[in-house]
Image (tube, rainbow, N blue to C red):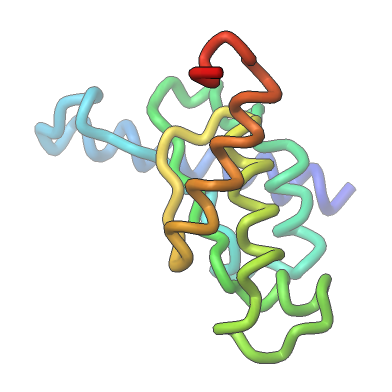
Length: 130
């Protein structure tokens, strides 16, 4: 199945780059992996990276997700202007955070922080401060 092979190739590639970085003298605790939304993937492959994001935890390094304003968000929402893809970008960031992203690359910081505060409170009300 092509989708499985894209995911497997992505994991194999990232594992090899982690090993390469370590052999070059970079300490493992300084390495972050980015599954690479966009970067030669189809819109469907991007969705599969999001859906299967937790599998990337097997890499054993912090994970970065950078999907803010990407073309596939425009394809999903119908928004052609990248600067107007705030809602879709925030939705993707929340999904990524709830699935264990350690770092989010976003354009719309305030909207993302507010959405994450609500999602985080729903996930763990004791941490909400209420």
